[in-house]
Length: 289
Image (cartoon, rainbow, N blue to C red):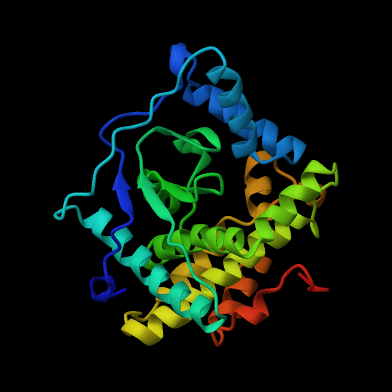
């Protein structure tokens, strides 16, 4: 991927200079986070939501200090890559929103190390990249990209770009009111997990929106090289619910799906990439996911 052709975003902040932990010495250890993740897999709950609840309980007994942050150093190639990808998502979604007579609000992307506090609570790096609608920020520990390669076998810069674009897709959903509708259903007590549940539809739509960005980014920059799209598809395939559950507990339980199968994630990314039409990304009305 010839990512250096991309415009650099000014909305990336570097909070890696200080580890953000919950106050009062109540931060979760890596072992504790691993337990939370396992509980989430077994119960069908979102591990990030569980961690957020724990953070809220901890904050009642101690204050939470925000991590120190600054603009990334210009000689930090990883941060420059993130700025280039984020900058191009900004250009893409500004144009698409303007075409629909709407205004796109850029998200902020926070680089952190080990753990971070957000409006959604405390999150350890083990949770992976995430988007918090409460502060409209994307959070990424760059160590995840190494894990994406070594643990999931999904190497390559465009695989990493797909991850960023997916999280930005959740920001687009927030601006369009999609996330609020899913949360409202959850608050009403509706079951949102499962193979055809709202959470799966939300995640697959974010995959499709990542594909929409990839289409427009390529038209703008002509930056894709042979094998780049395969890198993104490989990443989408590596983090499907069925594959992750099979690895974690040796069996697949569709009733607890929250993100969709590997095949679904690949197909919806390709749907967005094939023409870059956001209108094809309505997973909530799709009869077949």
